[in-house]
Length: 401
Image 1 (cartoon, rainbow, N blue to C red):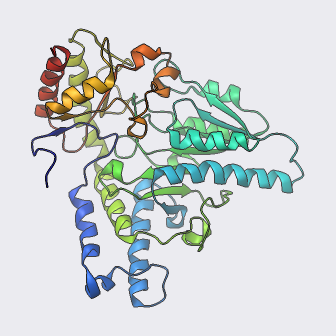
Image 2 (cartoon, rainbow, N blue to C red; image 1 turned 90 degrees about the vertical axis):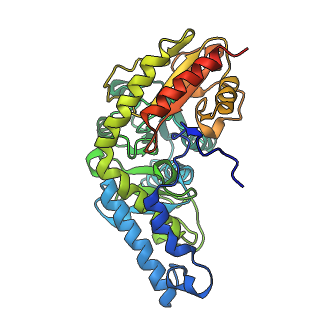
Image 3 (cartoon, helix red, strand yellow; image 1 turned 90 degrees about the horizontal axis):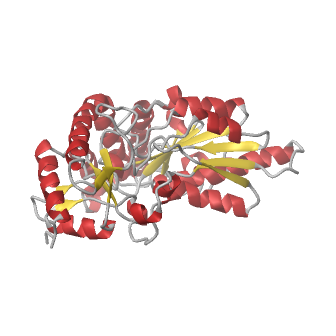
């Protein structure tokens, strides 16, 4: 039964994107039931014909992802259940491997140091907290008021015991895009590994793993129109890594568990659809973003959370984030939903929390104002008519009696 009207305007792409046609087509052969499913639906780790067919499909997807993400080798792509697993595996797996290497070298006395940022997704902050409980020193770098991590701030935070730095490529709430290549270069100069959560960046801004020079990166399929429940962890060749999920030794021993071949095919198809066209699509979305910021700025009590100038490519082209005086996010979201518009107050992973966004607090925004945050995020199927209609719905929401 349809529970969402056909004319519903979805503006929460940063939470998840609708399944794209390319991904659906790629996965369709895997949805055939019964004996016919054996043509593609075997276990990719089995030696018989159905297993070999599944293995070939999995490796085809891996090669496609590696090429589109800018990895040098397909075996640098580790298939995971999503970006949360990839982030956890990266933080814990890289830090533990570094600690083991230090101990083998007879340098195990000092507390090893891990640097993350205060604006990371909880999928990075939570494993960083776990590492801290295990005895690692953890530094949370604060952004500037616009949400950017400054290279000089990272340089000051690094020390001789720093083994890992993790900085997201683009923020899911305010859209700030970090200078990943520069930050990775500074981390490497200090002898530290560098990981980036690239979930929000993919398909919206420049993403190339080799050009970035990172050691590890996390990706999610459903943010770019692929299926939910699958992602990838990039591990540069020869990067020290201790497996986070152990068991049968799949993914060359780096991530145990039977792979979801159908989802991998859909993931690869979605990335293949967005990556070659990202600049064209970014320009289209940027125009919608700029129009939306301009229109919302005329409404009383509404102001942009960060200063995004028209055409500014230092911020994601698809995210608009505002603060609304006198109203809480939940109230606005429900009022807009009743009018047929889907938006959010921030990360979907913390949407049921009553606490103000840690991202906004790190920008120096007080708790009362942060409770009135609204994020509008656009994507492939967003039109200018959607933006115009949303502005009118927002006007009505503010005048609600």
